Image (tube, rainbow, N blue to C red; front, side, top):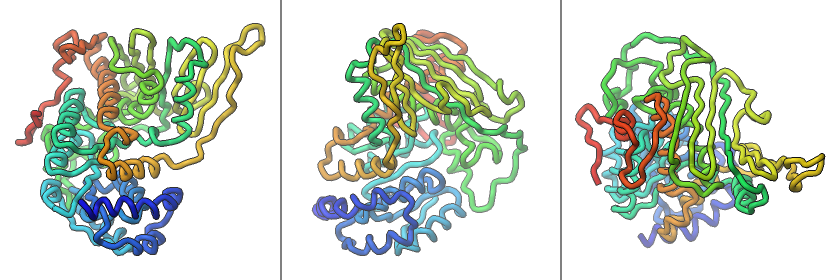
Length: 440
């Protein structure tokens, strides 16, 4: 623990300058990393080495005192490629296909979890129980009930858990939410979130042999056993209910999260949603290519909408958030924000705010925030602690529950249940293949 405290007091000093170098090749980081004694490092293990897992680790490694001591992936080709990448900066981690063996390593202080969503709950709970702090991909969980289990695990084992909703660390998002909190927009009765995604159709694909080097049984884990299909593997897992929740949970957690922050809201009272395969009727995805959800929070409404194959979204933005106030509308997305005033006989009700462009790297700021919080062991320092990630995950899943049941659903906070049986059956998933849902 003493070495870990020293790491935090020395490593962050070097890391501050590197955070801005978002495109730094791995080779160029080696010279900086040589300044830190091996005794002053924090050991990181990565579970899920493709895509965002690798991005998260690469970002964290810009803080020189962070050392990758282990990699875990069920695809041996991905695992070996990432090991070769790390060797370029003189890092030689232990390699695993079973995350439980990685968690047994005493050298692992922190675990990055970037697997398909259906694994997030088990891995987070197991990591917390093993005494590891966690940096977990969004959405936090693949169901409403799992999110509550994960919050309970972090509390029971006194672990720091940061959810990778990195917009919480980006300055222009903070500035926009502060403007909403200022009250200048007047009464906000409606908020909007949307993602118009240019994804092409996903053609139907036949089942196929499991690729060489892939531990498909471990990839499935608690999900229902099915024959291998290439459409369900790697990136496209997010379009199948067994493993994820489609665009609603992939992008919705990012955008709806900003509404919850701006409106200081908790769970909605009622939700209704409609959607289906409307843009691509013959698409292979299970999750809808087109969906609209309406949330009733009592004092205001939230609308989520998405569609695939189109990129011209609301207000001229492909994706975004709108706080629609009586005096003006604040528009916000990953590129920046602005305020457009309401008019009375050509007289604006408030002063317009011209476009405020984003100027920083949200992911780098978010991983640095997590590492900084390790110093104080204070979860309140985290920009997106597990409770925050759990709330927006549950709100997003409610949109999908309403869609899948085809009913307007109402949530009862006192019982943590919906007002009908079919919706309640979707609160907690069934676990298969011998895996058990943690009970805390």
